[in-house]
Image (spheres, rainbow, N blue to C red):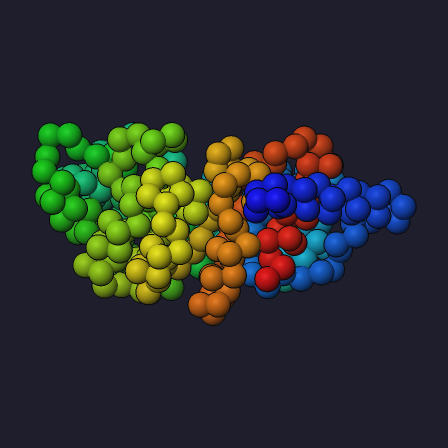
Length: 305
């Protein structure tokens, strides 16, 4: 049996066993089991099991052994809700992963690649706002997507402009300790026309900026599509990687539903002594509570190394 068939069969068997346990005991069979790595679900991922209340969802995640969460839209939530969620996360021992500091609504706009005073000031103002959000929710990282590629300008000039803009942002973030993690996104399926698509580009920017507040978000799903060669590219850029996200390909669902050998990938990340967060930025391959249970069991299987 090949690896994919084995993994799929194992996931199905694990989900079936766990489902039986849930029905007989009225609680998750995997409750209170910890993971080797800090995988971070997002709100809504376990809504059928935990209900719509966000605090109840946090409690469910904690009961299942998750010690982190990420919420891309945390900066869009009312301040009082941010503070409420922060208190709950602190009580439950759940760390805050990334939220989007700059990027939502700006993916197709030319921003970081331009030498434009007004745009630079707007970027800096966004990062100042991100710092305040991070303080309220005890976040260490925020995602930055540096916008679209400029067809009318040599790439090297665009790179120089992006570096200058990241330097300005780093000056804002450094005093608070907030780390911008720039995210290369795949151009072939999801995000055509963006400036940043490869890990090597992010590495170049980080080296040029030279700040602890400017690092790389290595999204395993995106990089499988863009360039593959996952573990070797992690090795080459390791000193500048501060955060991971994942989803299997094709489909962008939980590990085991696509072609990526997540067991080996997680083993490698763990072997490097990584203590950060890995965001579960993907969908559930199956609907309902059964699909949510399958996601949890998928991570237990891939975390078993």
